[in-house]
Image (cartoon, rainbow, N blue to C red; front, side):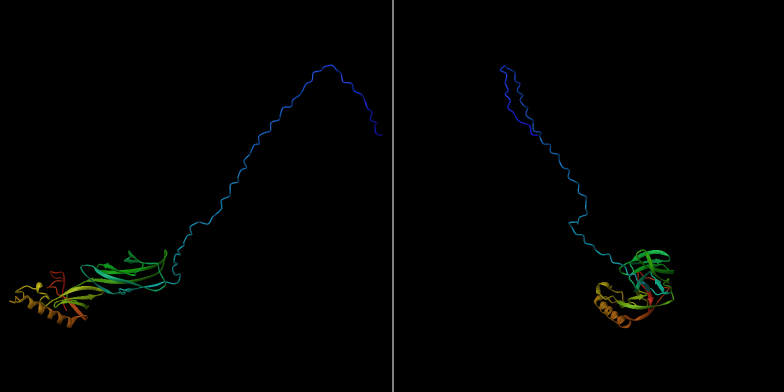
Length: 254
């Protein structure tokens, strides 16, 4: 049932009363606090360098078989020593493969290492010597070769086969024996020099004309060249004359 609304008369008293007015205190708007949002640290990643690197490939040695051979001196060769030593030409040929280097040993003693040019001169004293070469790829020995030679000094009364390589003047020649060159002053022959300044008056009897002596010196040289130049000869040393003369030339008969 719906209630019935009725009018009611309200009488307000006339007596004075204290009225308390409540003034509302304004509410301060709080200052917003800004909390910084932390930025996550990026995970480092590999980046492409700004400068490109140029890689130079290292040549790889041939992995195939290596075969080397000593071609000079010959195995069992007899070599003539000069002044108590012999300068011996060592040559190594590579028959196959491509070794990095070749090490040389004489009588089991290391002497030198050959790389680009596989030849060198060895100084050997009189006696028997073993020459051994070892070919390397990296640190590995891939092939070896070995020979023996005999070194002896010149002896008196023995004939030595030689090749005439140059005629110096009428009584002096250069010869080669076992790849070594020796200057020989011919015994039993004495010729004038080829220039006037090198001749002396009265050296040949009573001749004082030095131009005349030089002329005959040139003729003597031409004769020696005609007979000996680039020919094969035999030389022999004489104990009475000695092995060498005043100017350091070997004294020998040809």
